[in-house]
Image 1: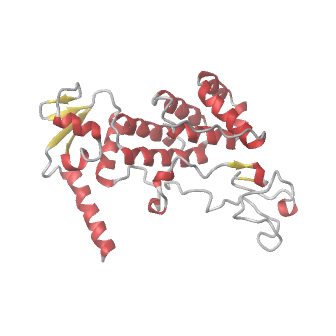
Image 2: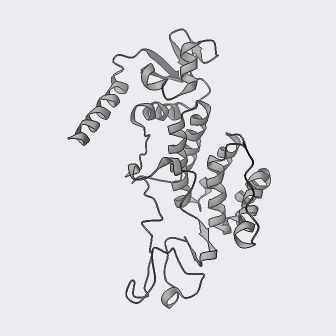
Image 3: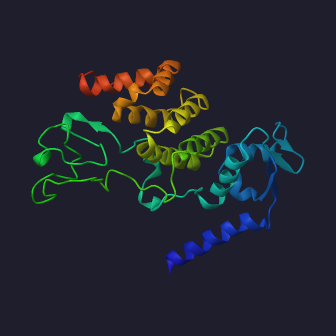
Length: 281
C-alpha cells in the first residue's frame, strides 16, 4: 500500500510537469518553454531560487527565467530531473545504490590483492593461477565454480547496470548534465550525473567518445570540483593501455592536473608512496 502511494505521488508530480497546471514560473531555453512550479524547482536549486526572488540577473526576465547559453536538450533533462529525480536514459534499480557514493566508482585496480576488474573475463589458464588473470574476489576460478572455462564472465556485484539503450554518446550527455548541476547548484543532479558518467566510463572507456567527454568534463568545471575528475583518473588507471591512445595522450598533456592525479595514484598503489595528506578545510 505504501509503495502504491509513493508511485501515485510521483506519477502526479510528473503529470504536473507535462500539463503545466498550477504553474507559477516560466523557464525558456531556445525554442522550448516550460511552465514549472517554484516549490519544486526553487527548492532544489539555489540559482533558480535567487533568480525568482531577485530577478536582476541576466537570465531573469519579467515573468520567467531565460537560459540562452544552455543546450536545449540538456535543459529539458534538467526539468525532467526536477520532477522525477531522474533523467533519460534512466538506469535500472537505481534505488539500490547510494548516490552519495557516486564519486567512488566500483571499477578499480587492486594489484596489491592480486586481482583486477577487467571484464568481461575469460580464463586463459587453469584456475587463473597467473596473477594477470585473477579477477575480483566475488568470483573464484575453480573446477567446481566455473570448470576452468570462464568465458565472458562479468561480475554482477562489481559492475553496475546501464540503461538498456546505452551507447557511448551518453558519456558526453552525462558530462553536460553534471555541468548544468554545477552551474545551477542542483545537488541531487550532480550526484546522479556523476554516477551515470561513472557507469558509462566503465562500459565505454575504449571508444572515441571517452576522450571527447573527458575534455568537456575538464573544461566545464573548475579544478577544485573533483567529481568527474576522480572518475576519469580511476578509469584511466583501470585501463592503463589508454596511455597508448593519441587522444588520451593529448588530453593528459593539455590537463596536467589529471596527468598528475593518475601518476600519483599509480605511485601510491604500486610504488608504496604514502597517500597525500588531506588539507584542512
